[in-house]
Image (cartoon, rainbow, N blue to C red):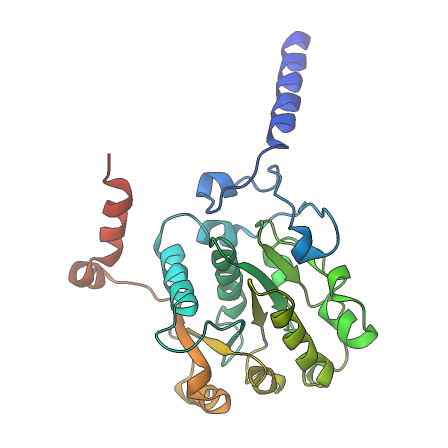
Length: 291
């Protein structure tokens, strides 16, 4: 039995050594993403991180792993949103995008993380995701990172942005987390330093898109201020949870012209929907029907 255990241990060591040289694919499959706890992830390019070869060592939230599968309803819906952002019917491509909701619990942080991953998986763009929700941050949990430094350090102590960026586990996606909790989040996010930061992040690199995960409007007054400093807003509305008057107030506060799209989150399709529209059934046949 001792020989068997030694052989198994040697095989495990060889497997770990082999995976250390692998790179994640541009669009990871569920099989590739599922064991994130043991798979290495490519470092963020130095042009984005400004902090050398930082290797991602965390583990994604299981919900994020499942949602970013190569195929499936959630992944395809996020790609449709990505297409709307990168190829607008009129005007320029927005460089700075705010993701928010009317009320807490509608899934705006989850949608923001998925959108950041999808944008980074594109061919031509890098993406920076900034967690501006200083009251109840979520991005560090979704991406399995420690929230010991981030946006609050920049706003309170003027720390350099490159020193605060972290890898996400996707090669072209960097994170600027919320950082240590502050006692005055509304004042910090509404300050001139915050508006300068948004401008700086957008102008530093021509091929970078900046996503801002902001607090819900009815939980934080600073969201309407942040919306004035970005090119566009993605509004997340949770099915069966969002109140109509809250959504209307959010649209009025932001302005209809700034809204890039509305994500109807957590919608449960019925059998009638599938029979009438057949959309996801078509997608499944399209991906798996070829030989």
